[in-house]
Image 1: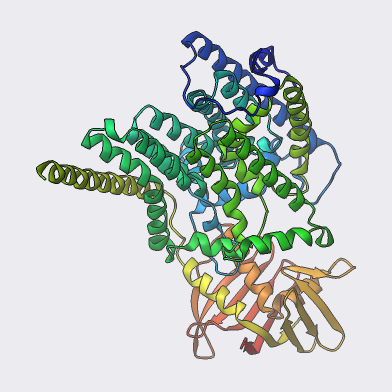
Image 2: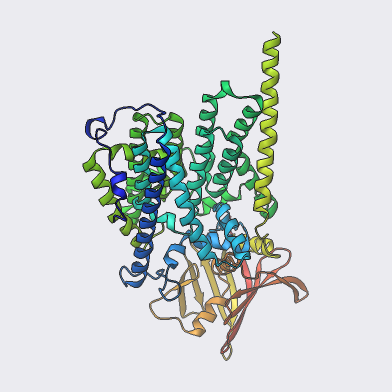
Length: 401
Length: 194
């Protein structure tokens, strides 16, 4: 899929291909001229539009075609895009409609973080149907996320790498989730915005973005790492009031999580209801979690749970790309942020959905952009991503992401 | 020394300011969350009934179907399924709310299963209502001089009512009403785990 000649912009620059692929780069380079940045933003928007149109078309086709048919397959007549509002999206809609309720030992909704359902709830009051609001928020926020990721990336890598990383994320195989009524699009936008705002020393907005990211997805709390590193880097030039705002930005994610716990305590009587609910969904953090996850992986074929292998492969891919990003000079705090997102879920005893969680590990996509400096690698990444993106959408008829 | 003291004072000021700002962010987050709906009345009690049903491993009941003599029924909970016996001829395996049977279940069979008092089945039906946001407000009442709560289960076409003792929350009766059939049961014993 090539929505326009944007590939020319996304293609590696002459001189950056080949043997320079793994050479560490300076952390901060001069910003691209405004005109070039504006052109890059336009190209990213075109890739966003093309990739989302492709996902929506694939979802339509998957719903119309009777193969692979499963009882869970939503009907085309009921809602043409209901595939994008299936699986966990149903739980988010239930929270939007009825709020939280913990049912011990049974699958219940406190396992799902509240920002997306809050927004769906507000839009429902304004008369927007839940499924529509959920998918519109997700897709719209994804565009904001790609643009913010580009802005952040070009402070850390050459401009062409930043642009390519955003394009790769737009067409990433697991990126169909960004078109579902899931909070990943929202979380991506908030994570990237928090990074951009911190780069610009706008600490309070950065803190608010980090808090909102944590309310969207628990991974948002790991933003404390890059925000703390960014604040530490400029500590000497800070006035006391700026220093207070920077500290607050670092604390914002944990503060938002504390607010969520307080809300759950008052509303349903358990501050850790989200963690209790997670265990009913088969996720319980333990010191042996990683071992259990590996054990579960080895028995996946005999338990007809081959989708687990998909997630494990993505996990390995993310970790490799994070290593490449680190070697390319991405600040260690951002690499640690990515590693925490990809590896910590394994401590809950399963690889399930790790491919989806890793979508927020921005440095992995910067690592992929470094790989794509080689023009042949770039073509392979684009072609493979597009094919796997379509396959990912179709897989929704059989399994959750 | 005075420069050090001044530096320490500035750090304390910065930390205090940060703590206040973080508290403000937490308060704003809480206010945003508080705009969500709060749990429906009665749902907390329904959750406790679910926990009570989950604690049972065996129930014995008497099933009353129109035109048939009372049938003894027993339901035993296993890790992945429930084993239901009604009378001497009917033996079924239930997985959640699903009957594991090759034939399509008749309306009478569904009624027998619903009223047999299988704890996991009843718990799952109550959970489905709770998750779906359907009303679970218990109706207080009396059965043979004992205070009870009645919970509505089932869908719009079939009305299943679970009656539990108000004090122990143990199930004591189930009734089933569809446009074409009525059935009920009295649960005579319920065994808890451990």
